[in-house]
Image: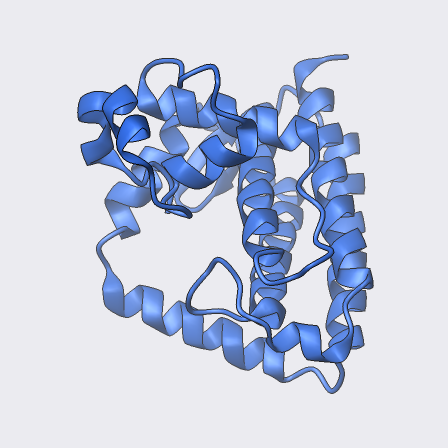
Length: 228
């Protein structure tokens, strides 16, 4: 399978897994906390939907410019530009919360997410793998773009199920792509005995590292979290 089709398929798996989680929620679940401190479940689901929407917009208007970032460096560039803008982060978080609360019923949000996610994946599967897209102020190949979306979906899937007793983990393919991205940001392979979920949560600040884990990472500890 060509790489771009592989990452498009991985995006489909990642979004379908989030849909499966959302479909099992009862109304009170949508107010539960998540791994994103600013957002309960409904707001986080809305935020993930904005990524699927961003995918549709980018694929509808491919660009001719050369790529200026890839699936790994994208995260460095984004953090460098926006990582310290606290006011912008707070405004964005408030917008997402208000938007999620505007749905009359949580089920309407789930339907909106499901339709948007399915459309994004369908567009990704049909997209010209040699084309490039613009997003977040950067240009990426289709393959790299899909990979960034998979990584974001994987991390937010982990966030989504923090307070859900029956929340299943993200698909293995998404976890593997996330591991590859984090090791790229780390600049070397992570300890092989770290499970994919533990690695994803630990290197992105979603769980505290033990003393032994910090020793294994050495100076790289000072660069955590690798993805916010």
